[in-house]
Image (cartoon, rainbow, N blue to C red):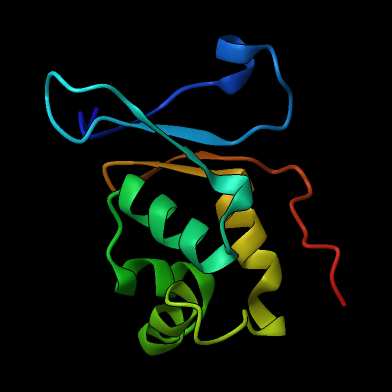
Length: 116
């Protein structure tokens, strides 16, 4: 497991539900930094999860069905998620888990954005 960024269940740590968090250990021997993904913009969530999953932009763009430039613009907050890929973004964020760039869990539950 990548030692710089490790995921823990907030449920187990705090007894709270529906709380997405990553603990980040920037340097060995230092304390963790809590990153609450729910307060971040979706582009920031995508970038953090992409790095956590060890995916490069091209790999994630292929998964989402968009161009690398579009993904970069979304990650930097310059562009909204195109309607055509809202469901794939929701599925990636909430239904898939990658380990070192390899798909480890693909939830078949309904992860649709419920959008327009």
